[in-house]
Length: 346
Ligand code: KG4
Ligand code: ZN
Image 1 (cartoon, protein in one colour):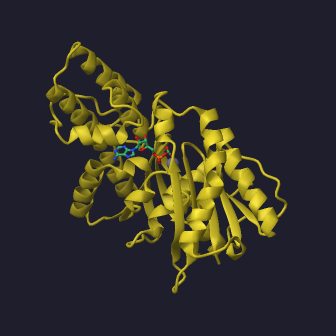
Image 2 (cartoon, rainbow, N blue to C red; image 1 turned 60 degrees about the vertical axis):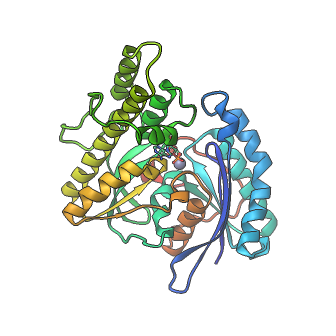
Image 3 (cartoon, protein in one colour; image 1 turned 30 degrees about the vertical axis):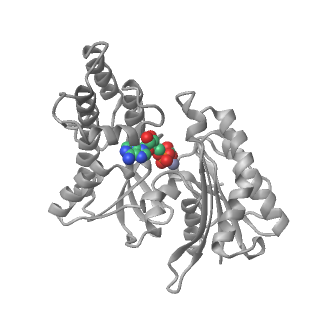
């Protein structure tokens, strides 16, 4: 069985083919990706209409590239999956429309996938895949959530951000420091040259006995510290502020993830989403989890940020679990806002 997955929820167009290997484990057969980051950079953020138009231009050539890497033809595809939400409505419609058009031409079923389910399951394509149950820390540009995951489609929300997402905290801090868009990776690079404790930044909600997050206050604190440095901060001051901001974000994510493990009694953690690529977060979680005998799983680095492989994978895992609501009518709708707990519903 081969599943073609199309991701177009934001500023990456991704297409990939996932099949099943010898022991029934999902295998990535081919993938192609185009990032629109350079196009949106000039505007300091994603311009939805430009994103949609670029997805239109990219999606079919990327599908050809993914199939060619897989050594397959369109006729070898059994299910066409696409990101149904959450995300930008216009951008989602491109992937959904192309998926349904392809599937209609091939006389194959379609499957709309929840973007966060793709992130959540992405470590199943790594060399060291997890097993259920586990706690998932989902940290992307738009979401920061802790979940208990008992199986495909069995997701219980343990806590989430009440305002900004962790990725947003990275991006907005980076923007203040003039590091461009999206600033997460740039802030992380600059932070390597700075001191974590140079600025005393808040760790919002750290000591509250819940599993929720809040990053808006941290953003304000970074802005206040930045303004205090005056018109010409030195490179050292800038690196110190980047390091302090990163340390505050990582501290909160790490503490709450460990609290979720303690509260649930589980001993396996999965970290997914763009911020999961952050080296400092990985080092802190690895160290803390090793002390507690907890196994940590990450997606391969190239599968941390948005991609088609995770969408094809989530569809494949749903099909294998008998949980796929396959459609044959080629009518489509997208869900720009969509709760993961309802991921299996039409
Ligand atoms: O999962 P993702 O690709 O898109 C969403 O679904 O939102 O996550 C993108 C986010 C951005 O905020 C980006 O700055 C952040 O992930 N990010 C990082 C790193 N790589 C990506 N943040 C910190 N350190 C990184 N190395
Ligand atoms: Zn994402």
